Image (cartoon, rainbow, N blue to C red; front, top):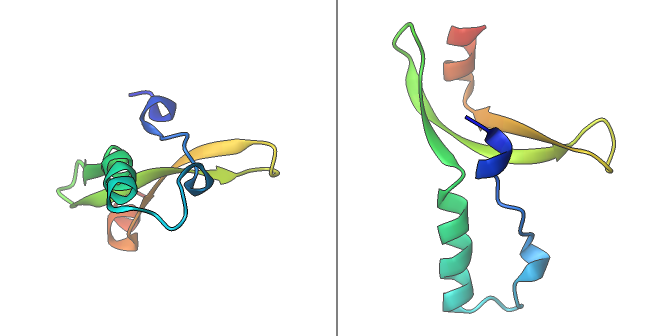
Length: 76
């Protein structure tokens, strides 16, 4: 799966302030595309979400999957 294709490129600055109910619906609609279910080979399961973090500097954004420790510790 191509992680970069599932990550929304919009920033909160792209939405009007204060955010209207329609704006809120648009943001939530985009956010739900980044949430995923995680199942490991040893039976652990949970949820996570995709985001981009500045790495190694603010000019580059690295796509990452964020989840809870109880999922990661089973993988590592």
